Length: 207
Figure 1: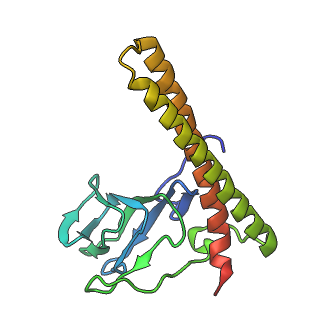
Figure 2: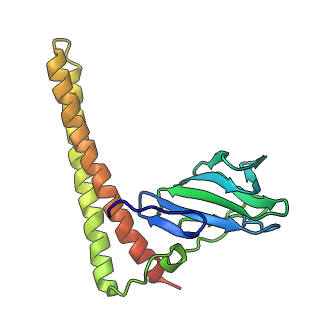
Figure 3: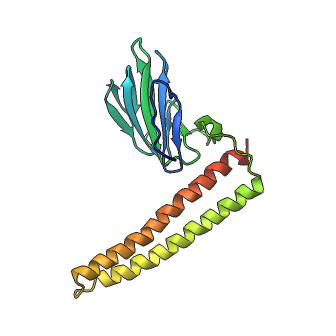
């Protein structure tokens, strides 16, 4: 994907959807209130662009206007409501974006049953990939992540043993750090592949 420019006044939708992040512009009308929910994995960033909104996050509340931002961390219960007589527009992102992306909550904070939304709810085109292909892809991604994690654990152990040596010099320490990072990098490269496979599979497993 090359450089693309989005405008909150016209692109009122999800503009980027990957396992690492979902980003969108959202417009809410006066009096509109979002449902209580949380994200099992994701941190959600809210940046108000127009109008005013009241954010309730983890038992605390504040009113935000244009240019102000707040964050709901993973598992923090939150709700957004429009304040005043003007519509409210904002940018929001959830990181990571892995199904089930939202966990509904009661007003008392109790978790509601898991709900897997179709990917069309996030402005992702329908996927007609056969189910057996999705299942095989998901398992392959899980095995690839497991293999990367095992390799990473072995490298971290070996390099840590070297770093604990009192005689190690700066050049050797830098080389060990590079080796450690390369192994960690492979894990983080494998993780979104599993997330993408899961996001394609999960909404279609049951209705």
